[in-house]
Amino acid sequence: MEFEWDAEKNKINIKKHGIAFEMAAKVFLDDKRIERYDAEHSSIDEHRYKTIGMVNKVLTVIYTERKTAIRIISARLAEQEEIDEYYKNYEFR
View 1 (tube, rainbow, N blue to C red):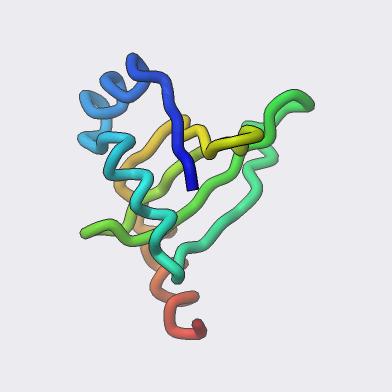
View 2 (cartoon, rainbow, N blue to C red):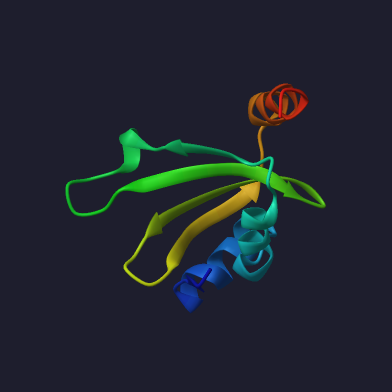
């Protein structure tokens, strides 16, 4: 699985959320992760997705799929509602 991101956006994300995209990419290794289509932030030209998964802590990663890679848009610590959803679904997998 290939990953890409905007280097400047990565710096901004680190300052804002304390999460580097290099770390965020590891969420895709979590076979218990939850993936959702993000209709609210998608457009005709770009479909966005939200994944909630574990990388030391539960993270939420927003991304889009490109032809050859997953492009990470943002990453942050999951909110409590997302953490609860992750653990609830984790029990059934």
